[in-house]
Image (cartoon, rainbow, N blue to C red):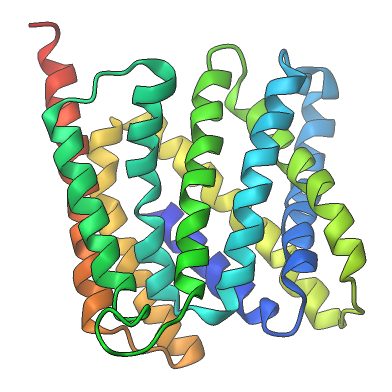
Length: 281
């Protein structure tokens, strides 16, 4: 619940900043400030604790994440927060398909059904914006959707890295690699910032680090299947903050589609949790 709250606040703040700051500059500063927040911890524990065993894997992961962020930041200023959250629920579905393709994990009927339900939910959310429901097209929703498989690739690489890297190493090198990959485009579109904008990006670094901290603590304290139900709150957080900060009023299709996607993800996660608890056979 805490992670969802922090990340929704982060998205709201990033959307506000992206209204006046170029998306590429915003992407760079978001992760540069996150890196700045992590540096005291690295210096306190000692840099040797954060040397990766697979530097190539860290950069591949950073590349996928950076590519997804480019699309995400481009679309962010043009999409209501609730729509952003609803579309983001599709990432776990792409992860399931990627796990089957790249790790050979079995794609049981539950996973196929959850994937189909998830994409049905996506059509409910983005259909009216693309003219499928007669409301005209808004291609920024498709741009946001295109970021989901790239983020899924990043998480799949993270899964591979966790076999020989600690969570702290992965988190630090995510900040390092995304900052480096984002710098060239940020320099091309760089513009002057006010003192308030600098404070805003610093706060983004704090919120992002706090969100990741909550995720790690939550997963350490409970099964993944037990934590998935909290994802339902993300849509409520985003609808509330979108209305409070930007005057966004979530449409029925956003709430219905987001609920369908979240329900599919929650259902398959709980099925997987019961299967794991039951053991082989």
